[in-house]
Image 1 (cartoon, rainbow, N blue to C red):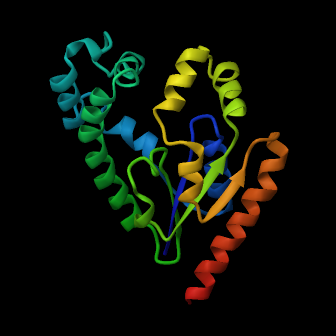
Image 2 (image 1 turned 60 degrees about the vertical axis):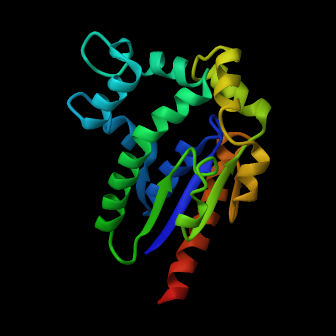
Length: 201
């Protein structure tokens, strides 16, 4: 088994890279998706979030109002730390179970947005960073995700710097250009990963 940490700043295009890697045969462990699952209605995670932040972070149907919670934690580092202390251990346990279920020859890609921020690089055999300029990421967040420029900048500022992410990288995928330039790069990375697995046999 080869474990890969995949990361990139918000708006860098990491989700598209993970989608391509899965199409080539990778087993994906998506930390963002797991983070949503562990705070679904009826979970210990949601109960802990409500205990910490109050019932005002719940939507009318009893689910987590993610935009409301996001507005709180992205404006206050201490509140963000409190949320992470609840969610990250739950995500870690679920991720470990998914990895254990993959086959011995699998390439397991952990899609981890906050890999750099949480010092998680040593947990993986290698780290792949999806990189894009600040201007490109800001444009994507405003144009494609409908964020205001202030909201987009707050999300970006809450993450590691581009330099910090690149310092943690074993392999870098440049996603500053159009989509058609991405696939050949991801295919080359996949080839390197499969070669790494073959060299172990």
